[in-house]
Length: 498
Image 1: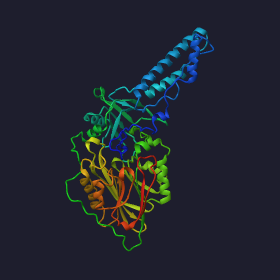
Image 2: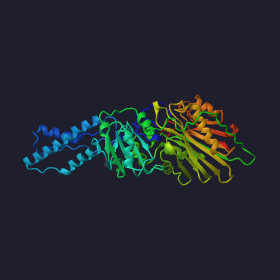
Image 3: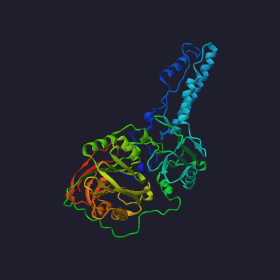
């Protein structure tokens, strides 16, 4: 992620992000609640006629396009205007019934007006603070997903252990690879409640939500960093888990091309900005990407693979690699590996065989800008035709940008290199992809360049997106900076001989 301190954050941590200016929002799907023009005209005309004329029945209907739950900013103001509109609608219906009886005319069908009002109340009601409520999601300001809890009771207990947690939601059926069940702990006030997800109206039958009433009083719409930090350290975990002790950087042996026929390998790295591009800024636990029919990022991946025949892809801020491959039309020829904390790898299984894989924590964000722990994950592949091996590792670096997070640049780099040294076979080709959250002038990138060759770097924040290898510089055939596909990062592609 490129921005140092931002309201948008990292979807790989699945927070409930607020929409950026210009990004699609819930309001795009459901415009502001308003009185229909013909209803306003009818009300005005009825007033001028004394209110009892058959020529101007007083029917005030609330338009179907009510503002949806989940448009987080301005919900308080919207609720006030909604209350006024509902009151006006109710008075209008009562007035019309009275006028109809007095004039001998029939009242319009009651359920029609009542249905609109009821629907809006359900969609926009202020969430009641209940200790536990089934089939509903309490939308709060920020949220963090936890995947290692067994059920709703444990989720509630976890929220109680986090001082900043005001609300929790347990989702027993997420449809997410590697995280079929999730506990969402949230901070700030409850801004709304939702029982269905637009636009397809999916019911939230597998959701259980609750709140801590005492903490909601005076709850502030504050930074998410305190919530994220407390969620990871509520049980007394020491900051810097995974940093390791200081020590020398391990050496990585250069891979030689050898005398046998070389194999061309093409690699892609891409930070998807999932929360914005696929979840459209909605609360992470709604998994809104599952209703996304397609977008520029999907087309970019599909067209790049079609034109260049990518062998391996490393994604950051990637929440559902199975869904992504399906939507890009690549599921029949590629295998996806969903790593923790939003890192994913996909490889072309028609050309490569997976031998083994793994992941480990290599760092952690600094407390002042804390989204979570940082992971690297890897896979060892073997080329089906030549039998040549390839070790691929993917990483999303710690924040703040260029700092190396809690561990610092040297320990973060040492952890990355140690994972390669321990898991890759000596002398076999290595590819390291990622958004390192460190520019080309940073200690992190400069240290990596002392042990690996830089194959390509991106344009974002002075080159925080990178591809490294232990193959010699002469093996690099070229690299291309691709489009963003709506992300705040460019996709980056490179080709090498091995």
